[in-house]
Figure 1 (cartoon, rainbow, N blue to C red):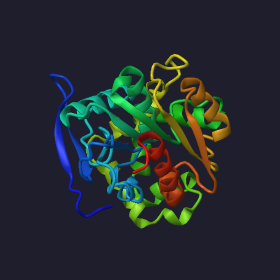
Figure 2: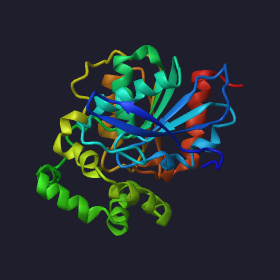
Figure 3: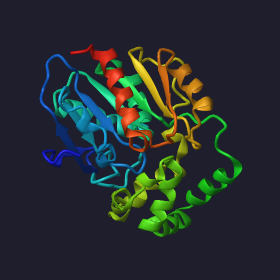
Figure 4: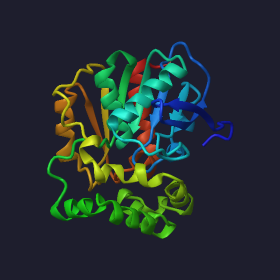
Length: 293
């Protein structure tokens, strides 16, 4: 990531009782001819997970990236984590930066949050670039996974499991299946994903998807949803958790206008796993949305 980008924070007043310090970064210069980009990481991620992508686009675009509440260096209060909360964070950030419209590039849970936001406030979204989005799962969750998530949903067992997994060895093992090019799962990446797990309040955010999985799903949205603007699905062919041949058709029911691009030799974390191919595809998509220079 560019050395010129500094951590910035804003205090988000969620309610009279709850507030959270949210971390974000800015890159590039304002360009009146180009809509700003907003990068949103996936579950367990952080701004640095885009470190092989954002620098490629700062010459032409103003770029923002956030740590979603409960993840990265953002604060982790005891609140109800859900797609609605993340969408509210997007709305708050746009108000803070006085942005009328953005192109959202979201990965996994960040992509699902972007869809939720775009459905409820379509006028604020110029385009969606959804990178291996979660939120629609079809029949991909097998019986063993359901059993595991049921155990994690138990407060005592869940917190014990979090303590067990919040170390570099366990984090490395959990990241490996999300990469086809497993050499990318190096010490730097593992440490990036391990450190937030040790923050105060991490149990609230990290265990939420297993305790309340319906809060992280898009099934309840109408098909098609209310967002009618440009949308693009970019998927790693080797994503075993969210296999493209099963999940892309579901997302195209939600977003019939969405074009789909499958990148070979890449898994769930496609933007980092196969960053050169992903950056090339994103560049082509941005040219379609905004026009070539």
